[in-house]
Image (cartoon, rainbow, N blue to C red; front, side, top):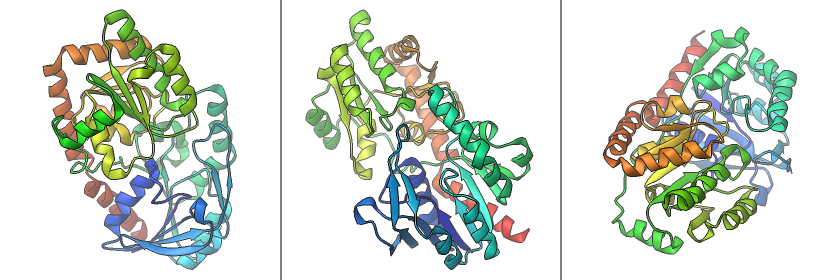
Length: 385
């Protein structure tokens, strides 16, 4: 099978969608011909071709536009439709409905290819009026047309599908969850030398709460920070908080930490290498994900795979990811976060049992080999139709 993957970003960029594509296609490239078409790296903005783990990567010179409110710049790839035509693939896998339009679909049809669309980002709800309205505006103008014209759709959670895919297109829509590398993301003892080194370098102590995500409004980190501050003030619980991630709110979050009086036990860590990320999960005693909106989270899958007790907002696809193996808070509820964290710290046996159950769930349902086979079988079925 010849597959052409379309996404404006690809490895070495390590965002959520990009991580999914690398994990899926490093496996499928062992059995199929895989080409990825993406934007050139911003620092080397020119057309190029390279191979990454058996995947042919075609990078296109692009114009980058920074748009307020969006986590990433809009990459206007030059010559994407020509690259699509030259790929002569059987399956064209589109992974970002915000940056591919009808001309790309026409190019796919011109070479008799099948167009598959994966929805990684559901229509936003509950972030803020501006962002929510922007999502509705886009889907009304372009998104619905793309979903109508592709041959098959996949969504990464039931919530993603129910909030984003029109009823008229549900007949061709399939659910394929994301996965986690449970061999890499595993429990690592606090006595591990690298864990000790990280704790010493960060100058934070236990108990420690960790969270992982871009520093944007959607992730709700400010509510977690307020919960940590109040736990110290009202309960006498002096907790450390480590956020791993980068984004436009870094300075504001650091200023908030100082205002709340937790700056001495609060750290933001950005630019981690992938091989180091599991260690930063494991420095924590509790993992928290206070998102306002989350169609499906790789971070919660990774934390569960590390057998960490988890607190997550009851929004979007998070209940599908975590199931009964963690604790839920209402979005924006500082009180809820406080109560769940205190419960975990005071009921360690119960929290441990749930954490081990979450680990088993990850190895059973969210294994990348399993996820890759689901995409493979779906695409092969499309070619038989």
